[in-house]
Image (cartoon, rainbow over all chains, first blue to last red; front, side):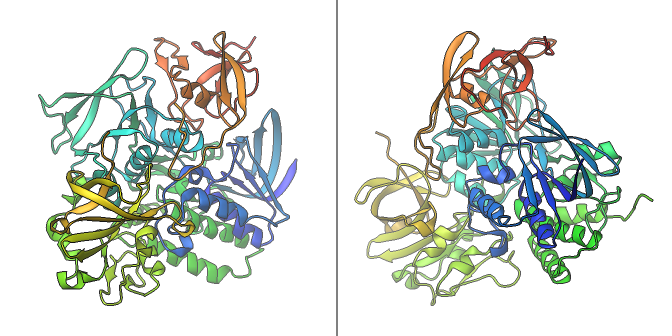
Length: 363
Length: 160
Length: 101
């Protein structure tokens, strides 16, 4: 069995940032990533990011990924395993991995689960027809593979992802017929909404999809209007002919691995669903197993990065090889997180995190 | 209505325009109507004409006298929420961000569009700037009839 | 349905990769996954659901949903959305739980 000081499961922005501060502390780090490349969701983000200079504001997502990866160059104690899926996690911090066709076992002194989130789904008739995609899938198709999802698309969901992906569809030459939002108001940043409205895309609030139509492929959808109680208003049904439907109705933290070790979770709707219970150092209820990024609460990549840096430092303290600038950096990254969460969009996250943090440990 | 369709009211738009007298020189119109954590406009401005401050959730404010209308903030804003506006005789001249293909060519006549996505006028393409620092956000200088100064926001290609 | 020109990204011409799909010889490009290559050719149905035999296609693109499970080189349950296309692969639609022979 191969030993490592720290195994980071997930090579997205949070995992990459955690690796940096952990490596700076002298720890041996292994990043395990199931995709062929690290970088997580950043690699398919073509828009410029928000935040401040420290979160790489005005840099396009895929360039941020390149920067985070290049930050890890030159550290001799770093190993990155891609096309590798963690298939077993044990309370004594053994991690078993399926790497291409090989089964490998590792012993870690500490683990960070930075596995991000998965897209939520929407229930409606015929929602399994080919031609219906998650928003992330559309981004992957377009921005990674250069393949068009269709000619005429409707987007469901007006959160940041729905608005941004609609804009990216237009950039790729796809006709976005409408953005449907079940709530009475737009969920994401208004600047994202304005960008698509001025390009002629109507945003229909209090509207949702009732049914998808087609034999073997999507050909049309039936949409209906909703009242304040989210109920269908009779006689408001109309049809839209499209060949692609994009569903962007939110993300759910993806930390199922932690169930293998019995780490406690708690349902906190503000954070996206069930999240691992953590203490103020991002440690789960299982000793020496930490979690950061979207896996512990849905936010933006900017927060995932700051949390990653922080968690890497907390792990270094936990293993008694504290980062030499530990206290200063902890103060700094916490301030950055506070600042990112200071506006109206941060209220939900702060409420959720307050509901979550408690310090319980195994013996 | 901004919250239901992303379109600010005329009053909201007017609140971001300086006095018409100031528009004899090009000035930045900062259409960031929401508190979100973001400040590249402030940090990119070489003339310190955009003020946000320590709390980066604060909406940016323009120091009208300091602003030269250079347009660096236009291509720095991740939300594409800034345009430069100027009144020149019977024309309104704008510098807008543009990230679609095809890029317009100098001298072409495209359609002028308002914040609602409706076509309102013809728009003459005066110049196109697309340098490496802008990172794929082109800066297009466009002129439209002056009466559209508060309505015009972007261009659209004419159908064949 | 491939993107030729994009305002932000570059899609350089890549090496063609030939493969078999349901007895037909098709091609994708280097860097494609099996699912993206099929999608580019307009093939949207990748498998069928086990009980009701409903057509299933590309959904999550990230290996979570298993909607894209196909039989590749005789091995079933291959998540084609995260499996790279390789020369001479034999790809077939799957409509059962997957039988390993």
